[in-house]
Image (tube, rainbow, N blue to C red; front, side, top):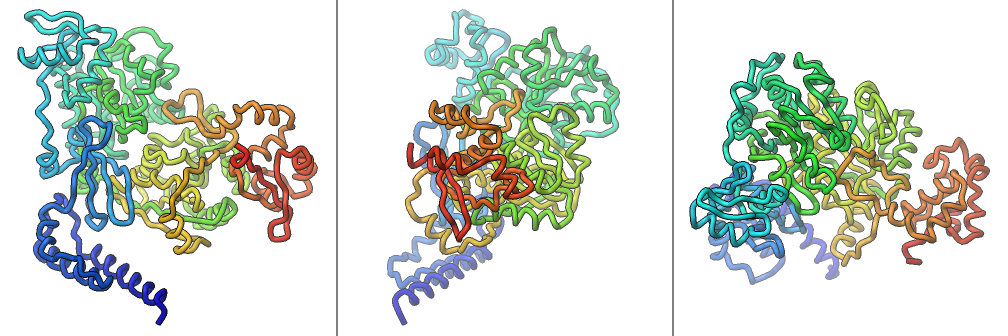
Length: 636
């Protein structure tokens, strides 16, 4: 038997044993809570695994120590009061934000925010050994606390403060939110209980009742007047907002990031309350709200994780008595989470597992399909749509979205769709939606969501899109993301946000061998920028998204000169090739991808040979068929 075959047998044996490990690990609420029976089985499996690899390095006596603490904690560099919690992947536990992953371990980022929102077990809190934060309260423009706490605060937060006297420390009101953010970053919740005035309350006229956890949030609101609610998607944050508006004298302002959400809020206000739009309640996009004047009773900030964006932090300056911030994803790729809390108020949250235990949220599976190329995506998409289910297809770029919509005769909802966006999606069997539908859209009859184009490795976007399935009332809603191998290698961290909430991720291969994937995963990987479609769909009112890389490429002087010389058809063709720079596209693909009726009409409209002669694109035969590509990356 050759050494290679023997190695293969050993590897297959190891895989089998690891699979068995997964079967004997129970769902863990605490990392130390393994039963004796499970512990014994794991010891046997690990020992058998070591023997299969013919190693003598395994120390069975050390396994007892492993089970006492099957994880380790390391300080996260350059991140204050943040730690990496490293757990073997066969331990089925999710804590904090899944930051990294390899074949053996999950690496979670944990910090104070995770603790506040109910996501850390007591055992981990003890191990972290966080110092007790200063006890400080901010009331109006005065910071109060014990003499020792005020002394430390005066030294540490001096740039935000004015003077100190026997009543406390007077703050600089112009830098109040910066001070609150700094306090929160140090683990201090400076929010002073300030009860909602009884004179502002009246019995709500509504057609629903609050659930117990919504009532808890409402009581916190009555106690503090300004809170942020960070419950998972689909558990009723919007209805908490409706209840608050119906219980308080108006007028009220609801600010949302997109017009789709504006339509949805307006629809629900009319359907579930007797509040009048335009007088009792005004629903506005973020940017429009910044232009509004006057004073409001309650301001609701939906998808409040956008607030730290510089242009939208100004929403905090809108005059109002009370604030209610809502989001299911209080994380940001830029690490400015403290501003989410400082700009909304006292944080109210519960772990996702809590809502699973209540049976409030389901557990859909994220299906990841790894395919050869974009053409294979279209083929798989056709197969999935053929199941005849109500489907939303997410495509970030207008170009790809338009192509897919034309191919499957489906409506395309994007930033340039001015009206009835929600109605269009609700009435269509299959609809293609850009990132304007990422957040908050609640459609109870959706049976399947498919992603074919996205914002790189954005974990927040993946979580927002995936949780559209949680809003579905159908028995088993499906979620699929179709990725080429290159996309999987460079964008797969977006899947971590689903895994760290405890949802199952299943990997499927279509035309790509497991061996190919494994080789690429273990080889050193050099970043390859994914160039998005020529016109990234970002409506003016949608905040917080990073610009598409293609936008930067199009700003290069040489590329701008080329585009200025081209007609519309050539611009679309050239941009499509840039989007997949380095990859050849056969001429037979062009009608489907660019919306032409035939190869002849494509040639007549685009004249690709002219672009080849000018050196803008490259041409060669692939499998006997004329094919084209750009090779901008190598030139750069």
